Length: 450
Ligand code: 2IT
Image (tube, rainbow, N blue to C red):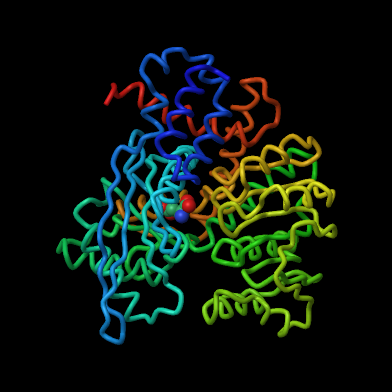
C-alpha cells in the first residue's frame, strides 16, 4: 500500500482503537483512495489525509431530563462537525442506546463523502445521544429534546451546522428540537434543521427521499446492466423510514419488495408490499411497536420466520440491507454469494463489515453498490429543504422528486466515471469514495492548511 496512506491508517488504528466503527470506515475509504493518492503527491506534503480523518470540531454535552414519574436521568449528547470545506456542516442526529464516539465519528466521516457526492454545498457532520427512545412517552421525548437543544443551540445555525434525523429521530423529535431552538434564539431560522413538518418549513418528499433515492440509484445500475426494474423482486432488511420509501417507490415502478426483516425475524410476502393499504399498515405497526414485524404476517396470512434474517433466500433478484451498520458479516455474505443474486445494493450506513464487503466485491458476478452513494438522496433532499428555507418558498412534490431523481443519476454517473478514470472498471464502491473525496480534497487544498 502507498506509504503515506498506510501511515495515516496506522495512526487512526492506534489512536482510536476503541472507536471500532470509525476505524472500519476510515479503512474502507482510505484503501480505495490509493490510485488518487499515488497520482497526487502534493496531498502528502499538505498532510491532507491526516487532516481529513480528524474532525474539525467535536463536542460532548450532558443532557438531563425528567421522566413521567419525576425521576431525573443523565444522558450524553454529541455533535461532530467533521468537515466544513464545501458547505455548512450537515448530518443527522441518532438517538439510540448504543451511541458513543465511535458511532458518531463513523457516521460523520461517511457523511462528509456522501454530502460531497450529492453535488450540493454541504459539509459533513453527525450527532446524537445514548438516550433510548424505546417506550418513552411523548412528554418524556419532548423534555429530552428540549434539554438536548438547550445544550446544542449555540453551536448550530442555518449557515453553521444543520442537523436532521437519523435512527430514533423522526418528525416528532425534529419538531420538539426546532421549537426549543426558536424559543432560545428568538428568531425564526427554520433552515437550522431539516426533516421538519410541512407547517413550519419542511420539504415535500423528504420522508420518502432516502428510499426513493435508493431505488433511483438501483435503476441506474440496472440500466448499466441492460436490465430493467419491472418485475424485480427485492429483499430488504429493516422496514423503517428508509425501507418504507423503497417499498413505495418499488411498487410505483412495477418492482416489489417480497422479503423484509425486522428485529424479531423476517416476512415473506410473495405478492410483495404492493398496496397503499399494506404500506400504511407497516407505518402503523412500526409506530405501535418498532421491535416486531410479525403482525404483518398475521394480518396478511404470509410466512414469518422468527429469529432469522432474509439473506440467502433465492427467489429474489436484489438485496438491499436497509437496517443498521454491520448487519451483513461474512456469515451472511457467504449466504448472499451462494444465493445467486446479482445485485447487492447497500442502503443503511455501512451495513456490511469490511471483510464481507470485500468478499462480495471480489465475487465478480455480484454488483455491489455502496451506501454512501445509494442513500445520499436523504441528505440531498435535506439540502433542497435548506434551499427552500433560504428563499422562503416551498416547491411542489414533483419539483423535489425530479431534482432528487437527477441527483441520483449524477451520483451514479460520477461514481462510475471516477472508477473508470483510475482504471478500476465498474467499481461503484471505489468510485463513490473517489468522487466524494475529490471535491472535498480540492476545496481543502484551495483553502490553505488549518
Ligand atoms: O445518514 C444520513 O444521511 C441522514 N441521516 C440524513 C442526514 C440529513 O442531514 O438529512
